[in-house]
Image (cartoon, rainbow, N blue to C red):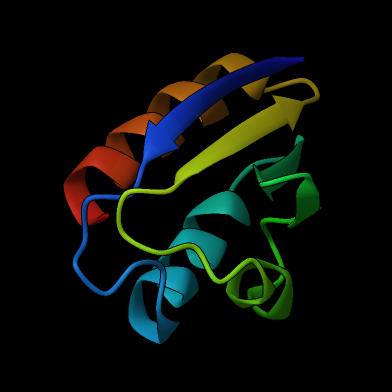
Length: 85
């Protein structure tokens, strides 16, 4: 399993538009993708799980991938987060 932490820089946090983009990105991978914040975690391939974390600007989320393409998934998701959030 691979993971990385990211501090949200978007002023609005993870709201509907970037959450939808994150879910679409996560769905590209065979690996199980999880997102965690403050002890709560959810499936990053499900919009309600991502939105339910209510991640705001300045908060840290951890994204982990476990599966056959975890290296690729983590590298691309980290780039996605830096670009969009």
